[in-house]
Amino acid sequence: MSPSAPSPSRARPWPLVAAAAACLISFAAFWVAQRAAHVNMLDVMVYRAEAETLRAGGDLYAMRATSANLAMTYPPFAAVLFLPLTLVGVPLMRTLSTAGNLLLVVALVQLSLQLVRPVLASPARRADLWRTTLWVAAVVVWCEPVWTTLRYGQINLLVAVAVLWDLTRREGSRWAGLGIGLATAVKLTPGLFVVLLLVAGVLLWRRDRGVNQWLRTALTATGVFLVTTLAMVVALPADSKTFWTRTLFETGRVGHAEETANQSLSGVLARLMHTDAPGLWWLAAAVLLGGAAMVLAVRAAVRGDKAVAVVVTAFTALMVSPISWSHHWVWCVPLLILLYDRHARAWPVTGVVAVAFASFALWWVPHDPGRPELDQNAGQMLLSAVYPLTATAVFAGYALTVWRTRRPEAAEASREPMAVREPQAVAKE
Image 1 (cartoon, helix red, strand yellow):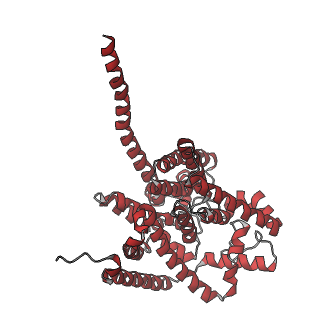
Image 2: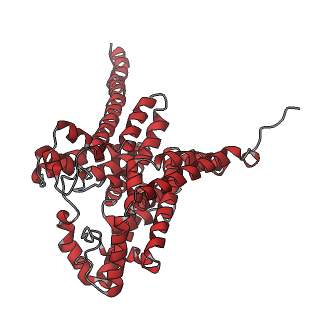
Image 3: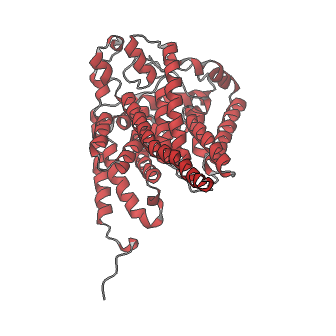
């Protein structure tokens, strides 16, 4: 009698234990490295100041915080979200922020794996999912966007996790859309995912003649965003008016467009043109690139390739935003997982992209308050555009894949009418 294969529940725990140990060691080393680098966690201090201003009944958008004199740039709902930061002292807040963000790295990796390979979400594959999650998290925590997110105490990982949580829900989930709606109410740019969901949902509804998960999620996200925003209009009318009529359009309060940390299309053009205001050139380029990229994203969604649709949409939002700091690019995590899964044999492609996000290359160029980015040479421009160039390569690579697959389809379609007409011609003869 041959021995039966071990069931998942009886599988040896050592691979999972090894993965957990590797992740803990990596995270501990990361924590020590950040402390050794004397990270200031500047942004979480601003978040705390926003919440304190809200509790004191002050003007959120007149507030300035830290030695850098930083202002609030998010919608009023963000200040409500940050209220728990005022319940503990600053040292404990910083510790909890770092620990929370490390847990969010694990969550981001796991949701990205479920997005790219949905079969891992099944109960039978739970051990495989956790083992892979922990190994990948141990590595990607060292990518520059993740490092810088924890360095400043930023909320980028929380936003990405909220979006991916929605997009990995089971078909028919009533909660799908909650995360995207709340994320949009905090940071606005996740609203581009609502556009993806809505357009893809409408196209699928027209094709299949029925409501689908894309459309349901879009409507839920829109509803959550509107309800949250209207609640802030009622609760904080003055601050809401200030944000939606003035602050929203003051991109200068976020930072200078030409800063090397600005990894958006606007930043690339500002450095290329040696100006802090690329103006209409940026607007035209953003519309053209954004429109073309979203066509690719919607096509992927309609064809059932959700992972590609999500990654392309995320990178589009980062590219067309006036300011996309390097720490906003935590979406490199699902991109790397997607590339490795789809192109395992072409590992150099994934390797090059991984190096782009782990090399800290954008910081190799001169950057200081004197604004040397306005006088960059060609080599410095290339280094300080490493993320936008990577995103453009991703768009171009997927567009090339689409073009290659459409050629055989078009050739087959052109042959079909001939196959129909030939019997008719024979019959007439």
